[in-house]
Image 1 (cartoon, helix red, strand yellow):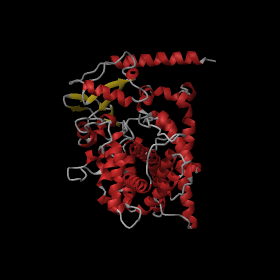
Image 2: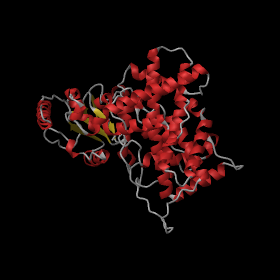
Image 3: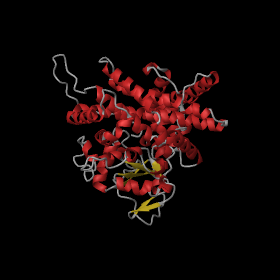
Image 4: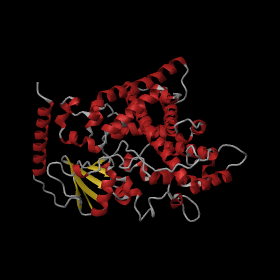
Length: 481
């Protein structure tokens, strides 16, 4: 039997030979690549990254090399964009060339390649986007206002319970709301089997689907043929991930089918879909779209709400101003609702600042170039992985002075009106891959935050002696790290 040590040594030798071959291949660029850090032999810039928080490395490189940075990892070309103007120029105005995704082998191995987020540009993606537009466009998203309010009120009640975990409560709010809209399913906290399995699937995805961790399999596809135990660590979870993905694709969808057959189905996106004539291929597309919306919306909405709560603790003056706005706009001792939104621009500014202050997905989701391109005198090769460093965008002092502080008023004009629409925020991505659920996210976040501020006073916890416990903000990494 071949020992694990010999196998690992053999793989290392093959990797080294392939890297040498790639690095010594003749290149005939007419223009220089964008500036970037000098690569190390064989591995490129892989060992120069902060693997826990790579966006900080990319931001530091941006200060040295400029708004667009080139680096190379395991033979893969990376283009890092550290400027919103550059992101708009390339991903918005040249969207035809920047709308695809890199092939991430770990997504396929984990059984999550159905996810709309990971699809390359093409007919399958267009089918997904068409359904998303039909069910989550602005007017349809706004029509769910009663459902938003019901779940937001439940969130407030759950947060009032001093024994509850407020982070878990925000996750339950986001997950149960999206599950209700998507499948008509009424979830019951973290013990709900759909919610618990979705959370487990997402946690696995955070470990295995990031661009940096996928780089080796992209560069050396033959490694996919090796048993997963050879890699150890997160890769050993791939089998469990595939099992969970299949369960979540099929079971909630079939539950809606069964409810429709016996006349007990609630309104949902899936029920609406099934009420029309579709073939099996369309059903597969709808299953993928439904689960994508659930998985993506669950984590991003909960993360944004947690950032909001943290900001309210650290910036009590902001919380007081927002509450005063609510009191002024809402009379007759009732809960605020979406109909009151136009009279609360400061609360909208808070939400914009939440997404800027600590971006939910600091590196966005990587794009891929379909063809060679030239920008600002630099050559951008076909197949390059293009990443918008949202952290760098959020810390651009020319646009956001004193960027580390939470200052909602930066999003208001001198006469107190909002500067830009919420759905245009860079946090929702760019070009043809902009988040199709951004109106749903906007409404669900607004409804939750206004309900919380109308009822609760958010403050520091206190110790057994009644002394305030200071908060030290710490953020964990996410899917696109």
